[in-house]
Amino acid sequence: MDIRADAHALYKKNRRMHGEFEYTVPDGFVYPYQWLWDSCFHAIVLSMLEPDAAKRELESLVSKQFADGMVPNIIFWDIKITRPYHWDWVTGKTTSITQPPMLAYAAWEVYRRTGDKAFLEKLYPHILAFYKYLIGNRDPQDHHLAGIINPDESGEDNSPRFDIPMHVDSDISFLGHMQRRRKLIHENRVCNFDAEICMSKNFWVKDVPFNAILIRNLESLGHIASFLGHEQGEQFAKLHSGLVANAMRERLFADGVFWSAMDHDYKPLRVATWAHFAPLFAGLYTKNEADALMSEHFENHETFRSRFGIRTVSKQEPAYRSDAFWRGPIWFAPHWFIYQGLMNYGYKAEAKFIRDATVGLIEQNGFREYFNPETGVGYGARNFTWGALVLDMEEEVPWSQPENGA
Ligand code: GLC
Image (tube, rainbow, N blue to C red; front, side, top):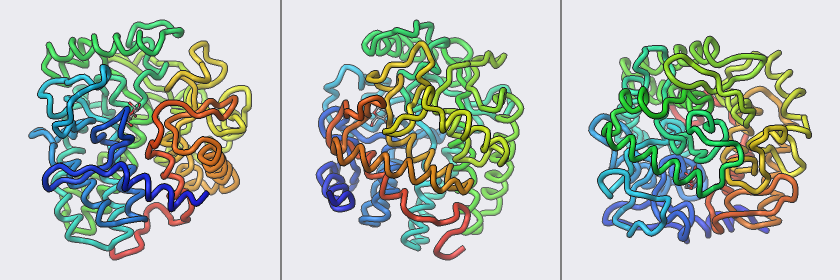
């Protein structure tokens, strides 16, 4: 199997046009729209395969940015909404919630691989506005942690990390969870998706992967702003990446790992998920802590490690199920974040394990959506784009040093 050629063919097959805009659907059947973090993954992959398409992907993504800077997690692009779980949140054009903020990282990757400064200039105001929104609107306590108002904003829709704030049992079914999220959407509609009010009333999680991704992206924003000579943007990015990192350490770190927390008083959400590994992506563990994380969690076959990769939920959790969407199966976006994190720390053999496991699952199943950690069987959407992230598990480029310019 030639993964690079097959991935490129898949991306062409999943490419859609809407007037002047071009984007890639995660798959044509289950997810026939444009998604925020998916598009960022697509841009990273396309920057290696077809750089002009990578630029168009991000340009279409920011074209529906809200006036307050929020980038919605789905743009429907006038496609008929056919799936019960892709409900229209407010306008019917986009949703009214966001997703993990991978925009700055993706834009910098596209620049790094193309050297196209004009593209960065064009995107810069959108990128800055998005992070200003997250810092300004999602942190009403001024504690330097961004809150999410719905589990879908984490990208891990039914993860058991959110069972307590969602008031559901650990054996909740997929459909039961969907109904509960619909109810939350209706509650948030009442507060008009005003983050501060909705968070204090309905759902407010300071999530570990979301904030780790935010930190790493603020660093990318810093590189972009510095390269383009936007001093204020650079200062904003540097200041807040440090503040969020300190806040994660102060408020979300316990027993050697990071845990998400909820509400104004930070009730800890002690459910062991791959969120323990996400902070590697932002360099938040010291080397000693990271060594302990590797031996206690990454290498532990009773919890996270399977021969097919890393489980999204520890096998020891009552909620763990090997076939249940974000409640245990292996997904390729977490694999990619973990891979990048491991490379940051120089855990090359462990990173190679992630890469080889990803390749193995693709060879066994094709580009499926998620995978049973016990059997390696693939589930969910076919022709799903995330597997192509494995193409970005080959380079050894230090994370803060661009190839071009700067
Ligand atoms: C699922 C995933 C989410 C992703 C979307 C489109 O809802 O949980 O992370 O963005 O599919 O691929």
